[in-house]
Picture 1 (spheres, helix red, strand yellow):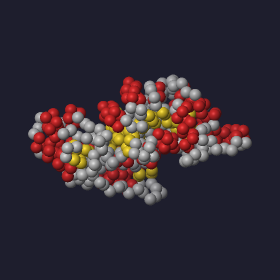
Picture 2 (tube, one colour):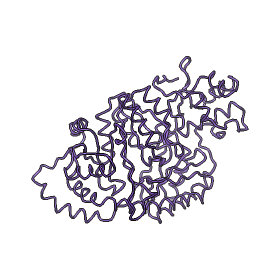
Picture 3 (cartoon, one colour):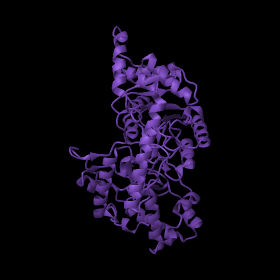
Picture 4 (cartoon, helix red, strand yellow):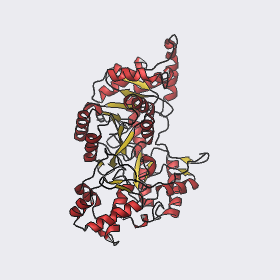
Length: 484
């Protein structure tokens, strides 16, 4: 048995009962039906790894079943590797060891949809020419720029002001994209062994950056239908007092969920009470689709920092082009100073020419976002309609923004499906890529940001791949075939 984490989130009998829903509808013996439903919650990330289950006595009393039934269910979960138990300490959710899905050694000739990205926006070449014409004014400077050119910092601050958050240029640090911003914040705010709250599913490169700084990740569930598990998030903040919590509150990657305003206030108040810095990744925040009509004045979502204490991250990688490696951090001046001092250990600044290009493009950013919304609307509708028509048993959401849909496959076969799709010439990111311990085998992230021809090719490849795995359960556990 492994040692239990005494900072683990505990799920009450009442809360678990709600999640179990209609577990009794199964024709399997009671203990197997209960074990299978709990296992399904683990595989889907609704019960994050590390969650402490209620005691056998409490759960049997709440469910109205014998203690023998609950004890046998917990034993079955221990046997399949989904629970660890220590006498006197309780039972904690785990995932069994599993072989990693091999990464492709080459993508030549394959349609790569592992990246949720858009092609370059029109006008980048012209903006680059204009920026090059202005570069001469900067050539007397050594060129090492750890904080950002004033012209770009002011343009970014103006975007925040247009979105309803008063911001000055000296609150902005320009970075080498959003990933660099996450890594820099992690290096400054996290010490080895600290806990960091993350979303499950969530952005895998954020997990890597936080782990690289020595953090122990504590997941909190996010779903398409219900969004953030607020009760679990609040409990995790109170029990662990983590120095950081990484959240993507707008068009969350991969679920597409958006956090309501009142929930943002409660989360930020709870985080402030524990001394937790909320890192709000807003790289998707302005990628709205619904409600963005040509010529309309769109009400963009307020930045997370408008609701309370938060550090926000932004980037032009999604909106303008991934080839422009420009991102930023918005923070209060004391943290800005710490970030600039710490930066030289990893890099010596952001390229000046790229900053000037982005400053040119931000001057007409609303038009860019309007065009992007039209492209994404057409792509989303094509992908959602195509998937629903080809795979009626799948759950295919139609998100209001972002670049992807988080598809429910109905069976834990995501890794198998992505391997089969590769044989059909298509690369996709399997659901477990977005978890921290191998969950989400019942889900698949499908981008809708690509050209129509690529979308049609991807749909055809998925149909061919699904013929080989439809209804087949992943072989991680002999009991998985009984999951309901």
